Image (cartoon, rainbow, N blue to C red; front, side):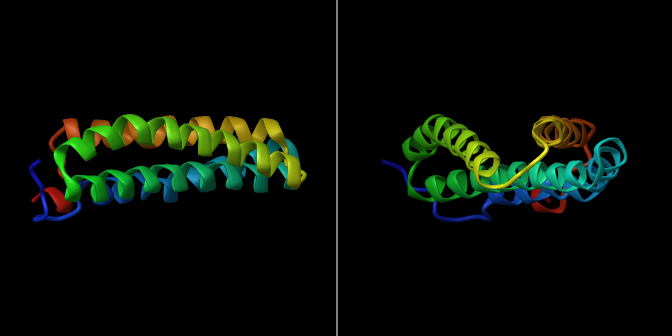
Length: 136
């Protein structure tokens, strides 16, 4: 079993770079849902973006830690971690919707839009050769 103990935690750094796009996406979603659905829509949209940011950061940590163990652990974490994070995401959404009064439409739509836009933006940035500082 080969261990990869050296080098920067690239996956965690990539996750941080991806969620840094939330600085631009989050306020736009909050403003849009605030204008369309009022205060409940605004803070529900912010909560949706926050759940997505936490999910992406968790993915980066899981992959970075598992790669330091072994390549096999990394592959297992990529597959099992996806289902684990999906379950945690769904659980968090149900918990939040059950405990706190949220605008479910604003919460759900903002989470989906934030996820898609952050991942798309990062993929386009990398494919155009605008490598973040962690790759240099």
